[in-house]
Length: 183
Image 1: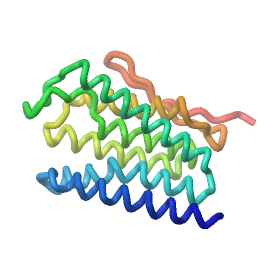
Image 2: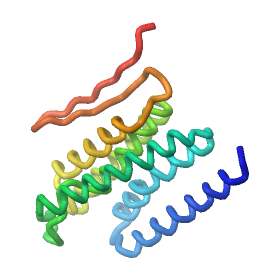
Image 3: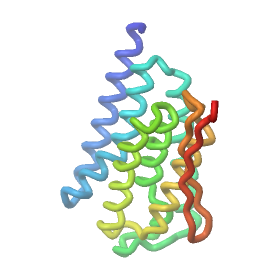
Image 4: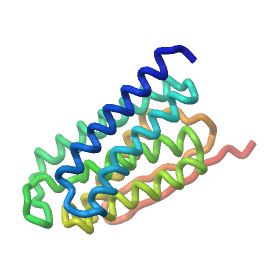
C-alpha cells in the first residue's frame, strides 16, 4: 500500500464527515439525523473497504455507480415534479437518500457477499423507512430510489465472486434474486 492511499482515505473521510455535519443542521429529529448519516455513511464505508482491500478498480466502479445514480435521480426529480407528502416542494420522486444508500448496499453485497450485504441492506432499508416516516417521501418514492441505486450499481460493478444479489421492480411488484454458481 502506498502513502497516497491513506492520505486519500483521510481526505475522503473528512469530506464525508463535513457533508454529514452540514446535513445535520437541517435535521429536525434523531431519526432523520440518523438516516442522513446512514444514507451518506454507507458509500463512505464502501469506499473505505475498497481502499483497505486495495480495490481501486472497485472504488472507481462505486464512484461511477453513485454518480450515475444521483444523476438519474436528479433528472427524474426535475421532470416528474411530484409533491412531497409534507408539501415542502415538488422533488419527492424518487428518493435520493434511498438511491444513494441502496447503491452502496448493492456494491457491498457484490464485493463482500452476504456478510456485508445483509447489514448494508438493513441499513439502507432504515433510511427508506425514515424518509417515509418523516413525510419526505411516499413508499413508491423510496422504492424507486432503491431500485435506481441497486440496479445502477449492479450495472457498473464487477462482483468478487459468482454470488450475486439483485433486485428488480416492475409496476407494483418487486423481486429479490440470489444467484450462486453450481460448481
